[in-house]
Amino acid sequence: MDVKNATSYSGNGLRDWLVQRVSAIVLAAYLIFLLCFLVTHPNLTYEAWALLFSNMFMKIMTILVLLALLLHSWVGLWTVLTDYVKPAWLRGLLEVIVIVTLLGYFIWGITILWNIQGATFIY
Amino acid sequence: MNKKRPVNLGLLTIRFPITAIVSILHRVSGVVLFLSIPILLYLLSCSLTTSDGFDDVMTLLQGFWAKLMIFGILSAGLYHLVAGIRHLLMDCGFAEEKTSGKVAARVMLVIAIVLIIIMGVWLWM
Image 1 (tube, helix red, strand yellow):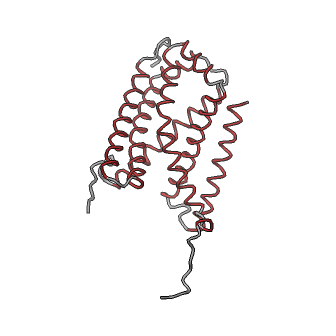
Image 2 (cartoon, chains in turn red, green):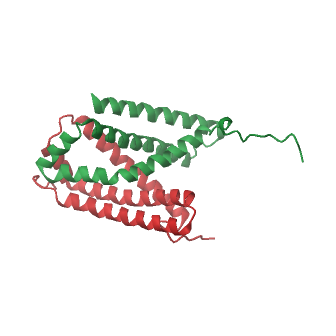
């Protein structure tokens, strides 16, 4: 039987589970890379920092990570809200706030990459 | 009615198993990370937009409270990362039994604490 849920990411528990794992791997790889970059650049300059995020591969990875963050947070917070918030109206309200906020973060993140100044684009 | 039923409602005598503790911390760290997204995006935005903005962020992060905040966010991130890796290993069929699961939960907790201590030393040295 296919149990559908209107507010979970895919409306399908198994697909949500898979989305959670795939996005987790993307987020983990990016977090480890970024931490390694910061540890190996103790006296980080603006030029090196902006150059890193001007790189087209880094831009693509960052947008992928923003997408993974959106999906991962949605699935995770949906689970937490489903478990701990009993009244349906309150849970629905919080879910809508979470989803709209996460979509806003996704768009904000893309505009940050869009607006990088002072560094030449490296393709 | 059986008068010898076990009575264990003394809340001080009930202990969460280690697996429950690492699980709830995984959730708590996840919610903390969700709440920290705007802070991180704001710092990323300031640091990438202009050279002056980058210097402002660097100066800000020298402050004790800002460092403590970053320490909190990174602690939640490292914990969530290690706990997530344990979940992926369990999905692959490792440490699923009661005994091995408890051992894996302890090992995971120790690894997370060690990483958080190393990160704290790195932040303040």
